Length: 221
Image (cartoon, rainbow, N blue to C red):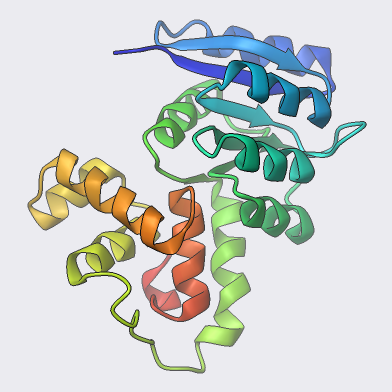
């Protein structure tokens, strides 16, 4: 299996160094570049096309939200994992709307970070429990008062089943087991969902479905 290439963007040297040391203890994880601000992160992605960009929010020159937006425009295949001390709604939804696939707070353990990197590389979303609750609660006022809408034939029945289970935070392997499908088939369904919804990550797909009322909030936690 090929190594997972990673860049780290954080304006604190200690954080970058510590994050790099945690990741590079794993044989399949390779840090190929470091950035001290969002603009440098964007340039690294242009030049290196990494699999994962681990990005802080509050950085000089260009913040994490704008860096995420530009990175997804330059190379949609680079998955963005936010690693921050901030859980403000403004930051959370700005980053998820910009295309971040995962959002961890800096109180996460080293193993949680490693697991998150591997998960977003597989196309899965990773949200810290605090962030996940914010996403559900954000949509609750507008969705609890209306009936669940149908996806207007945009997605097939099986694709909707996969998306609903993804909204419950099941991994691709767990979805495969739940539906009696192969992992390859579930991954193919996820790719088709991304293409049809014109999104780049599972997080974006779930948020889109919540906004459209395709998934009930009660089923998305």
